[in-house]
Image (cartoon, rainbow, N blue to C red):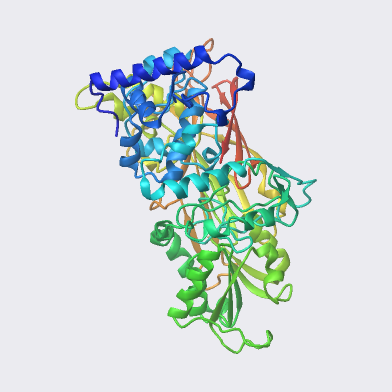
Length: 633
């Protein structure tokens, strides 16, 4: 909720003026800046405004200044979004990062100067949508060094003051992390830290008994100490803070920037509920497991990233002789264990590992699948069926496909089954209806098209996860990439491919002459995926889990990438001006050529996407646009 923008009271003005006078006096009396230190108490105005160069002696005065001068009411935003300490921490760092680039934290408009930005700042709107931009783990890293505001903004919350200040000091101590990652030999040996229902959000696991930490096969040095010893000092602080923060698993292997994303929160069961409530997702797995008895009866099943254990429960119900549910999160492993016991599927491990007479029972192993051999006695290539819900947004974002492939190579029997065993990415072009333009054109009878145009321009800078209506697709759908999990190699997770999109034919009742005489505008592309439980393994009941715009929506939605400028498309030989640029209304393109690359990013579980776009005219002439490069992290 934005500021009420009330007039400044005389009392507030007086307090701000007094602060400025005090600070000026201190500046005049201070003769030797080189000898000054914060401990000397020589400077009281240590709280720097989020938007300008003004400094204040307290958080309250600073936030009052922000409310009155910059239309930013910190306390109202915090209340409306119900931000906890870490949510507020991210917000402050996000705003500082945007202001440093003269960009509005609300609408994303980039200004020419800081003064222009201050003149532009406006009341907050659509805060829930804005939150998607800054509710990211990278904003847990202080944007500005020695930012006193990060230590003090919660001081008015008496119940949390001591805990937050103490924990914040620990966060700052974590700032100097150096990693000896050497030359990574196998990118597939990454963490299987994603729970079944929450694998789309962040990395989670356990190190030294801490929930939600990524572990490491190499030594990490934190402020000169072995990280495992250093983290042990946090034990007493973390025991009662699991619901508020999860120190990011300190994985030295394959992670290039461990300083980004210290924390990953998996304490909310709402995330699990969202995954399980996704009927398309859960029913697809249920059918594939329960309606293929020849596959599951008497099988040894491994569930990678089990979360609550729902897929393991299906496998046990289907008659598997043994179900090994692997979960890296300590908390969720304990939850899955209790759920198995409550449903009489728990397998009390006998003295001899070779005795598996408890048919249809499941056991939960806490740890990463890459380290499973250290957690339990299991023979290589002894699993009949691997099952995992590993898919992320845009299929590969935050996915655990590398962990599934590792488990396949290490534990699956020759010819064993993987569920799902295929994944296919699709792409199509979307039109004006897939943008926010129609909304802003008529707002209670008023046109606000200028806002819509700005929003569309801003959207070209970042992929957006949202639901697209199939009626808003203006090209045909084509396959972008297909993965065969039974045979693919680890490095095939990264790929580059070229496709062509042609204008979408209308329905059978449309007049073909009319279709050929008009052009349409393509504003960008939509990506989605299908996961296949094919007849190769699911002989009785093959299943397809689709996230297509043409099928019921899922929690994955679709991934939208907007062009820098829309491209005009036309069917047939619509009269075109040969001298005009391809893709304009005067010379619509006949098809759009795309070259798309998707690869694992330097930041663990992120992906890099690059897209090269060209319009092909009626005579084969081409017009290319500059490549667009994105990072989903």
